[in-house]
Image (cartoon, rainbow, N blue to C red; front, side):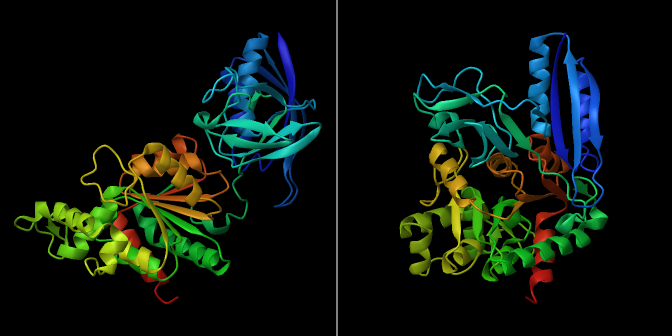
Length: 403
């Protein structure tokens, strides 16, 4: 038998972390002995846990403790982090520590240091007493890569006891009957962030245009509630199609009826922008006079369009290099306070992987599976609202219209 003493602190009970810790031990066939547990006596005071975990072998114990680390447990004995030199560009040592999206500290030279550029599914590289997350592709031969779990401490983002702006949620997904109240809370959060000079990012799929949400998203951009827009080729294409022809995928959004020859409209929109030389040039030449992309350019709002294999055209502004697209997304998301993901599973999950768990994230989609998938993939901070995206944008714009 092998054992180790681990510790954890925070809002362990009301965040469900405590049950997760115990369940993890049992799942590995181990046992636990609680050595100390004190419950926080106030809203702000954390609970503190110290316990001995035991497993049938050192190997099983290692796996057990590795699964406890993302829940905020750390080995009680103060050990410096283990680093090994990478022997190949783009590769880490076999036992490298793979990060979560939670705030992480590593112990270097007897001091705990915060890991910078926190994100999930990365390695940690230590340089001159500092540590940062690094994608595998960015590791270079000779980099000091953190290996194992000794000297690693993770701080989960605990559910706030006062719930703050997320007071409208008691679980991960709101029902249809609560959408209006949920929109009101989202609007309240956005007001607060704008007043504090914070940055709001929106990750938007083309469904926002198909469902009639484009004018309302344009209104939000015009009103200063969007600082970053992340999407793919299709959002821009159908937004421009709607601006030029009043259709989306050839359907007139006023009448809901397909227009004769309308299935060509998105290609004609692409051709017009390509002929102009891009979205900015199309606006300067008067080809594009309204819409989401028009407002982004007019208000100097940063936008990144990351392409895919299915894209028509694509537009000159669309980034077709995968690595460049990912890097541009990461740079645009720096220091954002709130991310709204609107009907975009592909780009939404991609953004979720790039965000630290402290960034509040709201996912709006008519499909409950999309709403839950972000949380299932590790973005536990995500709050879900199951509703039509066009309706959500309409209600949100209306709530913020008087501002």
